[in-house]
Amino acid sequence: MGRKVLITGFEPFGQDTVNASWEAVRRLEDRIGDMEVTKLLIPTVFGAAGEKVLKAAKELQPDVILCVGQAGKRTSVTPEVVAINLRDASIEDNAGKRPCDESVVPGGPAAYFASVPVRKIVDSVKEGGISCMLSYSAGAYVCNDLFYTVRHFYEGTGTQVGFIHVPCLPEQGGDERSGMVLETTVEALRLAVGAL
Ligand code: PCA
Image 1: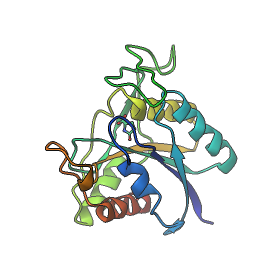
Image 2: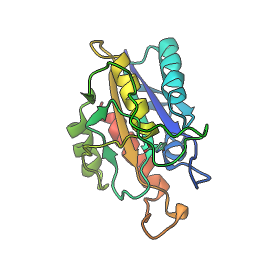
Image 3: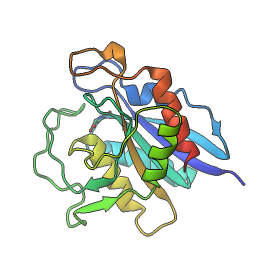
Image 4: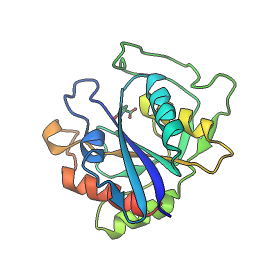
Protein backbone atom coordinates (compact mmCIF):
# COMPACT_ATOMS: atom_id res chain seq x y z
CA MET A 1 0.00 0.00 0.00
CA GLY A 2 1.23 3.51 -0.77
CA ARG A 3 2.28 5.86 2.00
CA LYS A 4 1.01 9.38 2.45
CA VAL A 5 3.05 12.56 2.74
CA LEU A 6 1.62 15.93 3.68
CA ILE A 7 3.88 18.60 2.22
CA THR A 8 3.42 22.26 3.06
CA GLY A 9 4.63 25.61 1.68
CA PHE A 10 4.29 29.15 3.02
CA GLU A 11 2.51 32.21 1.70
CA PRO A 12 4.72 35.26 0.89
CA PHE A 13 5.97 37.33 3.83
CA GLY A 14 8.09 40.42 4.48
CA GLN A 15 8.92 42.24 1.24
CA ASP A 16 8.12 39.32 -1.05
CA THR A 17 5.10 38.83 -3.29
CA VAL A 18 5.80 35.12 -3.84
CA ASN A 19 7.26 32.43 -1.64
CA ALA A 20 9.62 29.95 -3.32
CA SER A 21 8.50 27.19 -0.95
CA TRP A 22 4.86 27.23 -2.06
CA GLU A 23 5.76 27.86 -5.71
CA ALA A 24 7.80 24.64 -5.63
CA VAL A 25 5.46 22.58 -3.45
CA ARG A 26 2.39 23.34 -5.52
CA ARG A 27 4.08 22.04 -8.66
CA LEU A 28 4.79 18.59 -7.22
CA GLU A 29 2.95 15.62 -8.68
CA ASP A 30 0.16 14.00 -6.65
CA ARG A 31 2.13 10.77 -6.58
CA ILE A 32 5.91 10.40 -6.27
CA GLY A 33 7.09 6.77 -6.27
CA ASP A 34 4.89 4.99 -3.75
CA MET A 35 4.05 8.24 -1.95
CA GLU A 36 0.64 9.85 -2.22
CA VAL A 37 1.33 13.60 -2.02
CA THR A 38 -1.03 16.14 -0.41
CA LYS A 39 0.00 19.79 -0.72
CA LEU A 40 -1.03 22.54 1.66
CA LEU A 41 -0.49 26.32 1.65
CA ILE A 42 -0.06 27.75 5.11
CA PRO A 43 0.04 31.27 6.57
CA THR A 44 3.31 32.87 7.65
CA VAL A 45 1.90 33.48 11.10
CA PHE A 46 3.24 32.24 14.46
CA GLY A 47 0.94 29.61 15.92
CA ALA A 48 -1.55 29.64 13.02
CA ALA A 49 0.91 27.85 10.72
CA GLY A 50 1.21 24.88 13.08
CA GLU A 51 -2.52 24.81 13.80
CA LYS A 52 -3.38 24.58 10.12
CA VAL A 53 -0.91 21.74 9.53
CA LEU A 54 -2.05 19.76 12.59
CA LYS A 55 -5.70 20.13 11.53
CA ALA A 56 -4.98 18.87 8.01
CA ALA A 57 -2.84 16.04 9.36
CA LYS A 58 -5.58 14.93 11.74
CA GLU A 59 -7.83 14.41 8.74
CA LEU A 60 -5.25 12.93 6.37
CA GLN A 61 -3.31 10.73 8.84
CA PRO A 62 -0.09 11.02 6.81
CA ASP A 63 2.95 8.79 7.34
CA VAL A 64 5.24 11.78 6.88
CA ILE A 65 4.81 15.54 7.26
CA LEU A 66 7.37 17.51 5.31
CA CYS A 67 7.21 21.28 5.72
CA VAL A 68 9.05 23.56 3.32
CA GLY A 69 10.01 27.20 3.80
CA GLN A 70 12.02 29.85 2.00
CA ALA A 71 15.40 30.88 3.38
CA GLY A 72 16.24 34.16 1.65
CA LYS A 73 20.02 34.12 1.49
CA ARG A 74 20.69 30.41 1.12
CA THR A 75 21.90 29.06 -2.19
CA SER A 76 21.42 25.35 -1.38
CA VAL A 77 18.43 23.23 -0.46
CA THR A 78 18.83 22.66 3.28
CA PRO A 79 17.02 19.94 5.25
CA GLU A 80 16.87 21.11 8.86
CA VAL A 81 18.35 18.85 11.54
CA VAL A 82 16.81 20.50 14.59
CA ALA A 83 13.77 22.51 15.77
CA ILE A 84 14.14 24.71 18.87
CA ASN A 85 11.57 25.82 21.45
CA LEU A 86 12.04 29.52 20.74
CA ARG A 87 10.20 32.33 19.02
CA ASP A 88 12.43 35.30 18.27
CA ALA A 89 11.36 37.29 15.22
CA SER A 90 13.40 39.99 13.53
CA ILE A 91 10.42 41.04 11.38
CA GLU A 92 6.65 40.94 11.93
CA ASP A 93 4.76 37.89 10.73
CA ASN A 94 1.77 38.28 8.39
CA ALA A 95 -0.51 38.97 11.37
CA GLY A 96 1.74 41.77 12.63
CA LYS A 97 3.17 39.74 15.52
CA ARG A 98 6.84 39.92 16.42
CA PRO A 99 7.48 37.65 19.41
CA CYS A 100 10.77 37.94 21.27
CA ASP A 101 12.27 35.25 23.52
CA GLU A 102 9.01 33.29 23.81
CA SER A 103 8.61 29.52 23.88
CA VAL A 104 6.85 27.72 21.06
CA VAL A 105 5.46 25.25 23.61
CA PRO A 106 5.83 26.53 27.20
CA GLY A 107 7.47 23.80 29.27
CA GLY A 108 8.38 21.76 26.18
CA PRO A 109 11.83 20.32 25.56
CA ALA A 110 14.49 22.74 24.32
CA ALA A 111 14.75 21.01 20.96
CA TYR A 112 13.84 18.08 18.76
CA PHE A 113 15.75 16.44 15.97
CA ALA A 114 13.93 15.92 12.67
CA SER A 115 12.41 12.44 12.49
CA VAL A 116 12.81 12.12 8.72
CA PRO A 117 16.12 10.70 7.39
CA VAL A 118 17.83 14.05 6.77
CA ARG A 119 21.15 12.62 5.60
CA LYS A 120 19.44 10.30 3.12
CA ILE A 121 17.52 13.29 1.76
CA VAL A 122 20.74 15.25 1.30
CA ASP A 123 22.39 12.31 -0.49
CA SER A 124 19.43 11.82 -2.85
CA VAL A 125 19.18 15.49 -3.76
CA LYS A 126 22.94 15.73 -4.34
CA GLU A 127 22.88 12.63 -6.51
CA GLY A 128 20.40 14.53 -8.65
CA GLY A 129 23.10 17.17 -9.19
CA ILE A 130 21.43 19.77 -6.96
CA SER A 131 23.24 21.71 -4.25
CA CYS A 132 22.02 20.43 -0.88
CA MET A 133 23.43 20.34 2.65
CA LEU A 134 22.26 19.82 6.20
CA SER A 135 21.34 22.91 8.21
CA TYR A 136 21.66 22.98 11.98
CA SER A 137 19.40 25.98 12.48
CA ALA A 138 15.94 26.67 11.11
CA GLY A 139 16.10 30.09 12.80
CA ALA A 140 13.55 31.28 15.37
CA TYR A 141 10.91 32.68 13.03
CA VAL A 142 7.72 31.06 11.69
CA CYS A 143 9.47 28.15 9.95
CA ASN A 144 11.07 26.94 13.18
CA ASP A 145 7.79 27.61 15.03
CA LEU A 146 5.94 25.32 12.63
CA PHE A 147 8.65 22.65 12.64
CA TYR A 148 8.81 22.56 16.46
CA THR A 149 5.00 22.57 16.87
CA VAL A 150 4.42 19.66 14.51
CA ARG A 151 7.48 17.69 15.64
CA HIS A 152 6.40 18.10 19.29
CA PHE A 153 2.86 16.91 18.54
CA TYR A 154 4.05 13.73 16.81
CA GLU A 155 6.84 12.88 19.29
CA GLY A 156 6.66 9.19 20.16
CA THR A 157 4.30 8.36 17.28
CA GLY A 158 4.96 6.67 13.96
CA THR A 159 4.46 9.92 12.02
CA GLN A 160 7.74 11.36 10.77
CA VAL A 161 8.23 15.13 10.68
CA GLY A 162 10.81 17.12 8.75
CA PHE A 163 11.52 20.59 7.44
CA ILE A 164 13.40 21.76 4.36
CA HIS A 165 14.45 25.34 3.64
CA VAL A 166 14.78 26.25 -0.04
CA PRO A 167 16.49 29.27 -1.65
CA CYS A 168 14.56 32.18 -3.14
CA LEU A 169 13.68 32.20 -6.83
CA PRO A 170 16.11 34.22 -9.00
CA GLU A 171 13.34 36.73 -9.80
CA GLN A 172 13.03 37.54 -6.08
CA GLY A 173 16.25 39.47 -6.66
CA GLY A 174 18.69 41.29 -4.44
CA ASP A 175 22.46 40.95 -4.20
CA GLU A 176 22.36 38.48 -1.36
CA ARG A 177 19.64 36.40 -2.99
CA SER A 178 21.04 34.69 -6.05
CA GLY A 179 18.33 32.07 -5.76
CA MET A 180 17.63 28.72 -7.40
CA VAL A 181 15.50 28.26 -10.51
CA LEU A 182 12.06 26.93 -9.74
CA GLU A 183 12.31 23.67 -11.65
CA THR A 184 15.52 22.80 -9.76
CA THR A 185 13.82 23.36 -6.42
CA VAL A 186 10.83 21.28 -7.54
CA GLU A 187 13.17 18.46 -8.56
CA ALA A 188 14.97 18.69 -5.20
CA LEU A 189 11.66 18.26 -3.36
CA ARG A 190 10.72 15.36 -5.64
CA LEU A 191 14.02 13.67 -4.76
CA ALA A 192 13.52 14.45 -1.07
CA VAL A 193 10.07 12.84 -1.09
CA GLY A 194 11.55 9.88 -2.94
CA ALA A 195 14.05 9.45 -0.09
CA LEU A 196 11.38 9.22 2.62
N1 PCA B 1 10.37 31.33 5.64
C1 PCA B 1 10.28 31.89 6.96
C2 PCA B 1 8.85 31.76 7.35
C3 PCA B 1 8.10 31.50 6.09
C4 PCA B 1 9.13 31.14 5.12
O1 PCA B 1 8.93 30.71 3.97
C5 PCA B 1 11.27 31.28 7.93
O2 PCA B 1 12.35 30.82 7.50
O3 PCA B 1 11.02 31.26 9.13
